[in-house]
Image 1 (cartoon, rainbow, N blue to C red):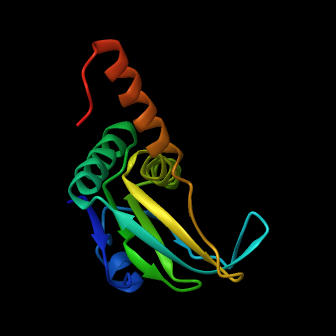
Image 2: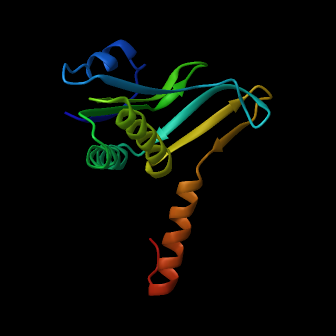
Amino acid sequence: MNRFEISSEAIDLEQFRASLVDETCGAFVTFEGWVRNHNDGRAVLRLAYEVYEPLAVKEGLAILEEAMKKFEITQVHAVHRQGELAMSEPAVVVGVASAHRDAAFKACRYVIDEVKARLPIWKKEYYADGDTEWVNCQHSVHAVKDNSTATKQTGNKQT
């Protein structure tokens, strides 16, 4: 069973790993994305993620299904946090179980890349100098531009 979740609580890494144990698998690959203390030369104190959860879960599950079809894997799970996170806290975890390591590595990379590119998740950084900034929201900007272009081409007004 594949699972994609959005969580307001800390991710239990032992439980996450245990959910993927499968006697038919010889490989388990995981990716953990942690909150780091810097970005673009600026000191970061903490992060906050905002998520449009219904769409994020739907699209997240679609990504997991794609990975199952593209790679010879047995299971794939992913959890992304929402809310405020402290330094070194996992913000996202992806785990893949398969018979062989090559498929697990490729699938894990595919899932995290697609999650970062496609999900409606926005990250706000809180800096040591007191400033804040929404970062890495390029996919949202493209979606707005694409919608604006479609509106102009069809003559429809946005509401």
